[in-house]
Length: 77
Image 1 (cartoon, rainbow, N blue to C red):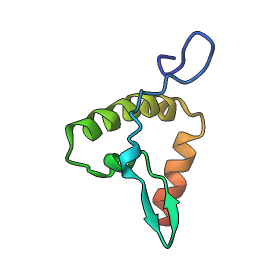
Image 2: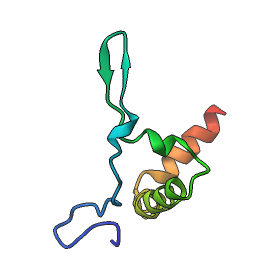
Image 3: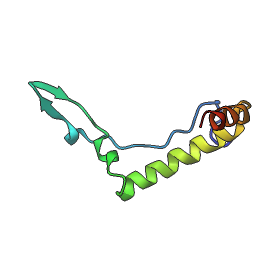
């Protein structure tokens, strides 16, 4: 399973923390080190999403309950 390393842990993509996204609301500092990822058009966000998809898609495809979940969701909609 390519989405796991030799220790069985997920190989999560690296992500940059940007402390400049912090702001103060009503006197309380709200930390949002990943606010820059909200820009869906940025190349950095696109690369991160692609890396996340590369991790999650094989895991989802290997899920033994996937077909039952799909069938149930299609029945609901």
